[in-house]
Length: 333
Image (cartoon, rainbow, N blue to C red):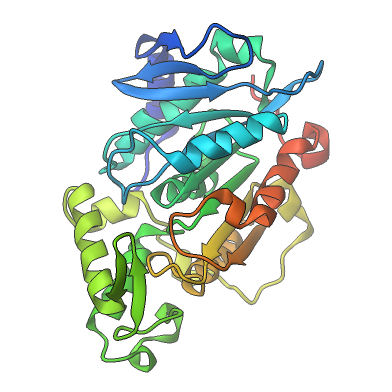
């Protein structure tokens, strides 16, 4: 299944209120985060901490675990708290293993759509026309997919998407690591798939230093297990089939600013989502979807805080802080 249609989205959204159950607020104190539950996974909502009489934007946040289940993300929690202090509401969505397109719908899109109509959102003046998605590692891929591959299937609009050191495209992430795992040296890898380090160079993993070839083999194995096996059908659900056909030499047209902004932040010491390879893909993705794309590179490894690259957050927030008419979006009824 390469995608899902508007009919399935509508059916899922209509039944969402039966599945998203408020468990309890974390605190009864106004201004502190509240906890909800969707099919056994927590959703933690942080209101804006700044007083305002105007509607406020909201950012949905996703942690990462190699497409595996996420029950806690230190990076997402920290960013949610920091956004709240800056006057932006933030909602951290936890999720199980993502193995099919339907998983992205039922475990990501449905709770997002439902949450925008919840009493909590109305009480905290959430503006449903100023919605952003941001994530770390695999959560960054989720945010990117929502703003591109699945953007026309959503019952709400994504103004801006932020990918912190995540794959831009899962199929191409596998292709990159396949190339590095099997090549004799960096020079023998096709130019598109060359990264900062070659197969025999020492890279970084979550457990310390490791030969890059061995790291690629290990990463491929982990993600393959998490998505329930490596098939074209599974990869298509989390990829853009036409990404290699994008014309990266074409000039951006003026109407790009009316589309979702794609922002990426990648680390020079990240040997999982390479800081040379991923920006190339983000540029291609932007061209395909006629969306503005911006990539930032920070000096650091995979798994860092958003504070390693604050410029990326600033670029991501800019469209969310503009009024609907200025950004050219259609209000969601």
